[in-house]
Length: 182
Length: 182
DNA sequence: TATATATATATCGTTTTGATATATCTATTT
DNA sequence: AAATAGATATATCAAAACGATATATATATA
Image (cartoon, rainbow over all chains, first blue to last red; front, top):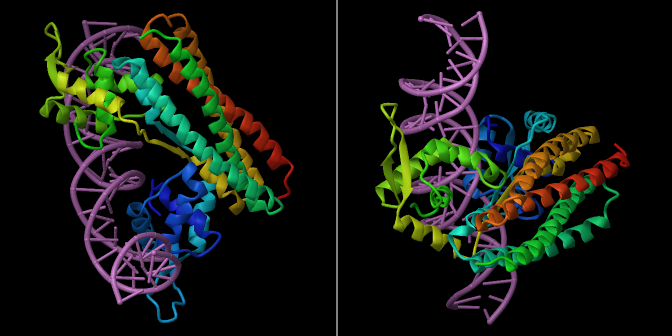
């Protein structure tokens, strides 16, 4: 595991539950996780390769029955230890990049209709994403007896709560801009 | 301006109002903007250098009165056009990285006290940041007659609304984890 | 059968991050 | 007056992330 490479921890977290290929890992990240973290082949494969070299994960040839071979990765004890150590460190960096707010902040360079367009576009995407998150929540509510699912459920409700706050703000912002001259 | 370099737009947005040095730009970004976008010397100086080469900004020697010279940057018409073009493009990427949620998602690898620690740490920082944002809001409320300030105000209220949603979620999450076995 | 889509691994150029190096100016302390 | 700490100012570097693309096989569909 590299010193400051966060993707390593994402991968170890996923491998803690099951063996996965690099492609599987990408799919997992693109699911429910994508609302709060992202990954690309460009960092997943180099991470797997380095972690394998350093003994945090190991390769398990999948039973391919004559088909094209694929590489399943399995977490080692060293990998589990690294994951747990990270979970137990207090600090956690939450880095937010809202291009929407950046545009709004510089809105004075154009007329208010431009800013309103920006907010409306944001609002539409938030509504769409919120619907997806509510779908996840509904599925998870049925299986909350399993401990892992409580953790998944909490991340989903975090998304729902913040997205609903976004929508309320959109309403207020549109009203305020609407009442402004220019 | 580079093809996909977002820091270019941040700099152009700031220079639209006033001439600034690279150091000034860093300070501006570290202020109210840092809640939704970040920048470092490592991308600010290369961006300024490239944009100067390509005619988006130009150097203005500051009146230093014998003191050490500093480089003030001034936005050109080409730079203003690029800023406005960006403001008028519909899509805006909001990339959120919550290490807090990442740890929570993988919480099943440790016991629930670890997850609770994670949430409590997050809660404390949100409270501190929220106080700063409320201070900004108070200052801005006095000067809302100026159009630019309305835009700044909206980005600040976005922060306040979402941070308050975070805190409500923290309360619910702690309660839910508290009632869970393990 | 043709073809579009999904699976799977890998790499590359660009951009960002975070730290550090260097030097000057200004305010404070001794 | 001298020492020093902190702010100002520019710049660079290694490491990491991003986004796109290349390559090839497997599977579903028209």
